Length: 183
Length: 177
Image (cartoon, rainbow over all chains, first blue to last red; front, side):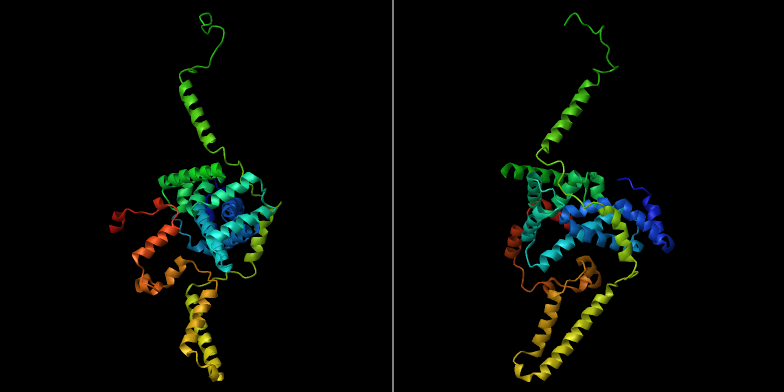
């Protein structure tokens, strides 16, 4: 993951009021697409993704003062994006009074009508298969396979050892394969 | 076979020396590709045209008008107190004006109101943030759960909710450190 500008420089600029706005523009442009695809694969719908992505950037902007640089900037931002997405889904299921399982089914049904989803049969089946995985396995699989992130990058974001991630990924692939064979 | 000993054709230097290694690498790559050939190359998500171009502008507008609307976590506690106070006053007035309906105890009503407020309100507070304002040392498990947890209930919960038993750290020794 190559940022256009060194993270340390960007963080320093973000913390100074006079350079904040410009630096934030650079930050958004550098990371918007990556964070968008990360969130989209969790919440599935484009409009919901747009909401969560904007909230993520607003949180980043308002909390940059507290960013201590113990972790890398991108992993900190990915963590915020992941938390925002999962919180969004939890609130959604609480608001509509359905279980997490029911929500997953509804999300996939909505996907069929989503104009920003190609909706081909095998792609729909992939989402159905992914919905059967535990949340963490699904995250690891998407980050590795479709977002093409490296294990050490995923390790920083999810704060999980590379060994455990490889095991999660392997399990996810096995379960997906089994699902595709059965359905 | 015997006729051509390689005089007619030339080969890159060391071609045969590293042939095995290259073959193995190629076979390995093919096995890996094959393993996931059941998956679609793309997962089918698209974005509206020009979406990413207007995102920065949209964010800028959102951040500009109400500059740094910082929400202090401690205000949540104040909000909770104010809400409780308002609810209590409201119920007090209400119960004084309609003595006929006094069959419901004042304290029951107040508690129910406050409980339902907390139940129905979408709190934009994560558990981590809550943990910051409620010191863990002062909270007993019994404060959070209404009934005693029997180990039977715990096992039943785990059975229903944990999809992958391997993800739980069952190595009790790690907790003893």
